[in-house]
Image 1 (tube, rainbow, N blue to C red):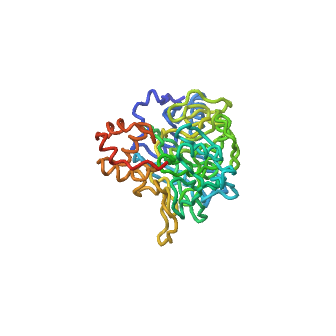
Image 2: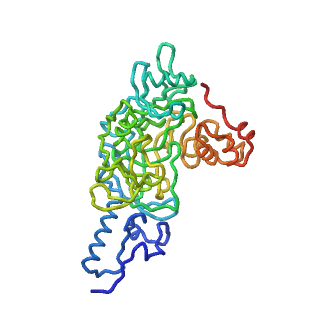
Image 3: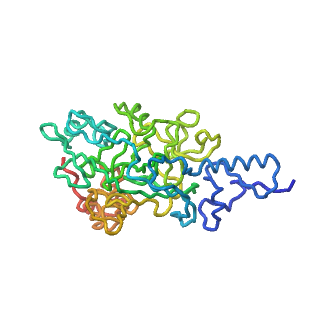
Length: 440
């Protein structure tokens, strides 16, 4: 037997999750350092060491993106593994997926109710009497009592297609029309690489892509920020101003949320499986439902709703995210490093919009949000409320700094004194710069 040494995370201090000198071949063997880590330092092993190598290979395979799992109904072309560059500068390999505006045969909606007598989708209300609600008469009349009036005297709801027209009322229910020509391209690292610190998910931050081929984003914009309500259907999805459908929740386990929150709704376009694999985050980490492989809800989740444990029915352990039974039931942050330029669409407007040259532009950017780089989109891809770009400029800070300070101080009802202190400005300067809140 050849005398050799097993290299583990405890005796390999020079191997890190972020390095530019490591070869691509070695990276493909690595899994997150939060999971058990074993590599062989020689080629001639005894039986026990060979078993350890097999376990390591299984762990790596369990934590890697499997492009064969994505729905054929969603794919605009065959998925492939391509070379890519991570945000930390590392060379890596990524799963490249090009998906349609909506998977074939997927039924979406309802979104906005037409009248108070109808039932629409859902909404996570963050004002007085906060919680998850069905879009129906009880919810809309409750908002009316708080000064947010979404309907006429005859009970007709103000429904607006935000992509083709602008609201003429203070409060409208947004229901966007689809654009069947849109294609979406995403890049997901095939093997997760852990970052130095987690990346928090803000408003409309990129989370990942579902196995159904539907993109996943974090919280939709607050009604208290924009004045309008971009309705979600009962699978926690809606259509972007660019014309493509996306989720704002772990939709394969959303019915667990409805049961927990006592909401009369159920998802109709995605089978429910609390223990199943929902999709992959943009850092390559898999997202599972609210229960683990033993059908038990984990109690050791970290700040991102992740932990190291058994991956599905693979029998091996690696880091992964879980949904929760409270909305939004997505990872609260990403532990890994994402790929550069990991999301783009051929859409005319909205998140990631890169329309082909010569496109006849017929769709609007959303109020308070749009394509990355637009004046109403912060540098980290979060959707900014209207007027925040001008406010940040007046205060001499970046829009991202202003948004983060507001979020840290309470979001829509932020403690402005705390925000001012964080930004190094006076209370009076902050109040003078900020846009007026939407009318009630």
